[in-house]
Length: 552
Ligand code: NAD
Image (cartoon, rainbow, N blue to C red; front, side):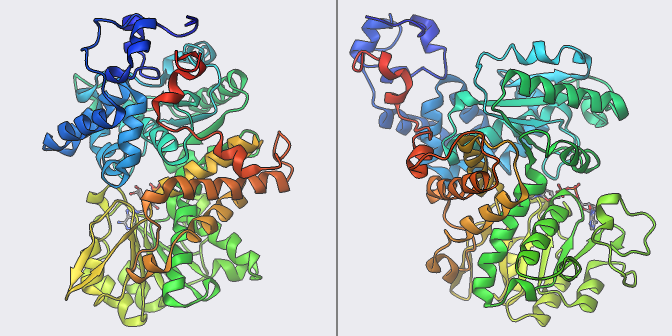
């Protein structure tokens, strides 16, 4: 029997992309030299899932559950994705926020096996050689971080690798991107986190962060090497600090196929939330006044997308900007402030300075507040009561991650608004029952948007990722929210539908690529079938393909 290209025996069992563990059938055990290396009983994948879940549920902490799932991913990817996809509401908060934040904080301590490519500041001049150590040649999506702003947790240095690994797991889970096409990368440019520098088990460079030209050269070398080696790759920036994120996005977004999820993905998911919220409040986007707490990557990203959406509705740029107001750590973002970073100036209004959020609500009378500040508890009782006194249905999004950084909890938003808030958060909150009415908070999870955008971009071979793609993705996501969802106050669809949602987004995004001559391949007649055929299913039949004895 022809088994070329497929390892045999122990090597096959140790290859997570091919391993089926106890589910290798009798013929496969014979052909691939597995006899005796496995216990005699052949299990189905369903039985293996039962075993995984049984062990998972015995673990008492979320971090232990994370370690358990990552170990499964390292042994048997198909089984990992089967478990995650079929139990997505339970598993998403473990493989991504909030638990991934805990995992990154202790990455050096829980480290078992490396995953992805680590490029350090000492590798300047040989990045291409390092990237070519990756065993796959057809890489289509890279998620890259430099670990400087991990979720709302700050500088975690090389420990940030948990984020690209987690995001790429979501690409496969949510949009069916084949795991062999995915590459997590961390640029270890040092860390300014003293606790990590002092930690004997820290796994990164023990030096302060690289800045200036040396930093830019490393990033530039990485981009060039990545596209030279993997010409069809989409590169997603993730969790860079905002002084680099805005700059690098501007520098590279029209040069390479790249986007920044913290800026553009967040904008897409928040826009989708606003569209759904307006279906509840019965108001128009153009009549909103949105007050952001936090003028960083997330907040400004949402503002820019809102401005383009409003311009497309016929408003002038100036009118559109008047719908977006920002309070940062120094108060209202206004023109008279001399301390504003360049990216904030665009949204600085000609208005008197206001020192804090509560007074800004009283003066500006916003219809919505969006928290993207990383400041837990900043949507205080007074804040929620104040916005609720101005609006019949106030829109309250507390998007900071992880849960410990959320501006308020779901329960606080509903209780302090008398059940009137249309609420969404960045990390998940359980449904809340007040006076026998149950409210289901939506999670403005970027996983609703970026996997579908990535699928659409790679399916169409788009040369770049345009802003319009996020705008149509937001609309496609909002269209997936049912009236039953809205009746429960839920402004995002069930994650159980994530494959359908990602497909709808991918279609919309690919159409933008074709319409704007960005696609590097002609549009197939049946675009739905074309995209669907690229979606990975975590079924064992797919793994050994035509080389399995049954298909040979
Ligand atoms: P960032 O560092 O770029 O920006 C943070 C902003 O908050 C800055 O403008 C800062 O001035 C402001 N800020 C800090 N302290 C403040 C205070 N006391 N009062 C008012 N403003 C204050 O970070 P970012 O990328 O914009 O992310 C911010 C938060 O949003 C993080 O917690 C992140 O996890 C979260 N986020 C959530 C989602 C989501 O839910 N889908 C997506 C992206 C980011």
